Length: 283
Image (tube, rainbow, N blue to C red):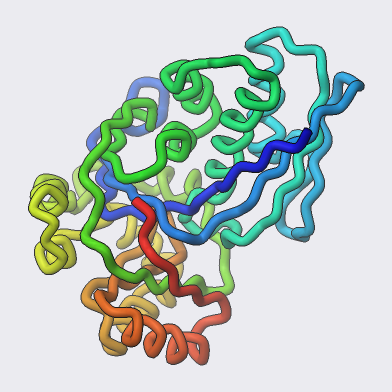
């Protein structure tokens, strides 16, 4: 029996860094929502006690370095399971893009193994496992739209954004979140308007949402990769109602109310950037 899981990408409507922790990590506060750009995860049980990963991507490892592999290993160790699993990952989400592709895959594996082995593990327990794997994994387990706090382990649902289209443009570079976080100087952080984003969501107000988006990591990534700022500028010039970098980048997204305009912006961006997508919000 094969188990199928959809692993949607996320975008940040807001990303704030609140403080440096004693363990070397940072306390964050992020508002995230899912989009209709997703990897597909297929799980098949193996009689032998091992984990196998199949995927067609020269950028993503298929061994223990893969977060989906780590998720399966943690699940097996935590619950004392001595069966094996073959994980097929059909990649659609760009790699090292600020869209939580690896985290989405890991979350899908945790949820899928829960079904494959009929474990009936609660979402709360899965969130704890996810938090041990990475900052974005707990959110990817919950999906939809939420505010995420701490090191990513606190996930509180929020109302969905107003219906709209998302145009994503990723330059031909990868950005390491770890590298960007190492450059943070807390006194220099420009904090986004998180409360205004929440208010716009509660009011289902597209215009207010567009004027409230913010990402405290954006200036740090732009300093290293000026093309991120160029993409933001081009998206806005092309007619996006708002443009913001997602996560630690380098992907920039634009929010667009109507599909016809989104398609037009998408076509224009394809001549400017190698990886361009236009999708609906899921959250």
